[in-house]
Length: 173
Image 1 (tube, rainbow, N blue to C red):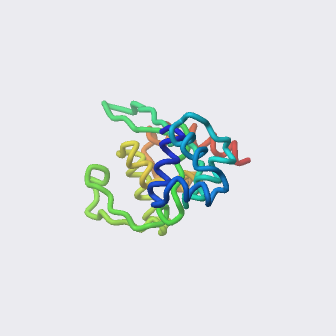
Image 2: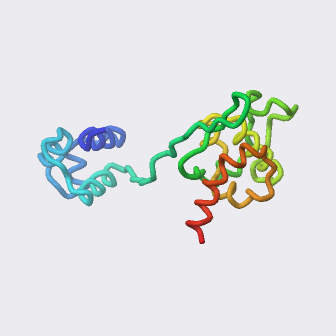
């Protein structure tokens, strides 16, 4: 998305005219027009001021992890990210319903991630059977690293993930 599209979208969501945004941001309407039409590029400070004047907050976050498929045994594989994923605390500790394709060996499908035993069970299943989207949705890297030694995982799954856990612990030290 271009800076112009970003700014135009923020202004549209705020329901304000270019003139009103210019007034709120202490700039001119012609400057707003030039930015929105990508004829001129605002500095980072100016862009932040304009977005805030439009009622939009800016959150800078690292890009989502990229995943590599690791063949483990007999045609099975696991997905391992290039860095540990992070979840918002409310998401990391919520109650979740795990799909049967991941948790095929249990009659349960609902787990409380605030309970360490439930979390360990979910993480083991998701790391062993999940796709990248499942890992990003259910696994918090900090909580995973903290409980790593106490979790039961198939050896091939543990071996695939161990370098990532070791790297996270090295950074933390």
